[in-house]
Length: 102
Image (cartoon, rainbow, N blue to C red):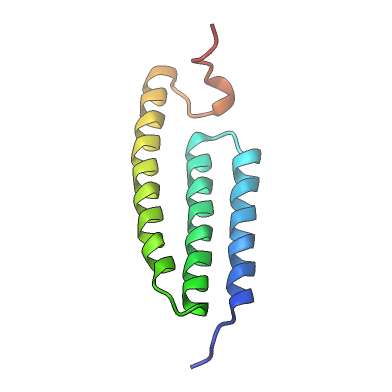
């Protein structure tokens, strides 16, 4: 089997994180924004696993489970908020949602 080097995993992780940040900054759809946040969390997971494999230590892989738990909770709460906003405003476009204006 071939060995994947650490820098390849870190470059892929950086690319995934960058695409997530660009998606959060550029998009106005709430569902797409949550998907980009999930992409950023998966990029962090990839780098944790890569470092865990590079340094023979299991702690990075254990941290991935905590990040996955936070991501699942974020997805559940975020989806509930998006459904609630859609029921009240009939849109998931962030620009059209102005609930916090006084």
